[in-house]
Length: 385
Image (tube, rainbow, N blue to C red; front, side, top):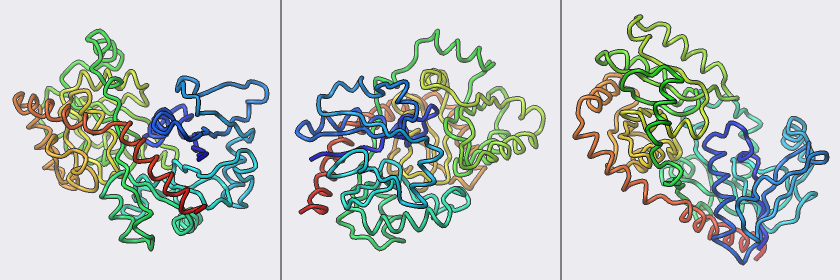
């Protein structure tokens, strides 16, 4: 089997969860399926003058790279509106892993879509970039795709409740966490990041893009009602599809009483190294999201050994199990009570830290890769017999 992986999300300089997922899939799929050939395909318009390899660190003889020399600003609109240029013009394949919902333009029947969540249906106000054209394409590809990967049973239920799709083509493929990458940072790294952002007290930490479904406006209002002497650190930058969400968060913070407003720290987008350092120094992770297809950030917090407060909706209880405090994300008093409980109870924090580490160890990228390999081979049979 020859499989192409849409590697574009992995090359985003400010990778979100989809980019992290894509990077890990590229790292692990070739090793999980050494008898197949894998191609990491991406756009690199500058490659004619400055060719380079982006995935040489994978060190797998069955992984190659293929760059299409189209500017992304041209390729995207042409692909979605006119169905050209088709990916098979650049690289041949049996199956194509579309890592971010929709595949690039292709007439191949061997497409496996990765549907990370159904937020655009569950909370349409949080996904303004998924317009009517996008939704028509999504529905069309669900009917055509040889396979669909979803990261949780929750997302599978959401998909099947709304869309007419053969359940046998839907594969639950939980994501993983790199425990080594999220080992606690050394004290000097924690001290450095605290000095950089002026974090001089114990703090609750949020990590993620500033978008509506992360529920940040409710989080800051809830935090403002907790006891003084602590801080809330919000680590993340605006997202492309809703940059005004960051402005709305600024308004919500600006409406808080002065003392509460002074307890909130905005870092902006942080590097992976700074993220681990911030997690290592935090008292807790506060992640009361309204909807998640999986909940990457919860696993990352677990891997660092961080006590976690998260939501009791969508996939979050499925991922967190009994290793986190879960609250109704629409109940600001419940969010505030959970935060206060974690600040005040060191025994509870120690128990959750240990439970989180155990929980995180059950989610590995090797398992994700094996499940994905099975789905790709099944799709190859569906598409080609």
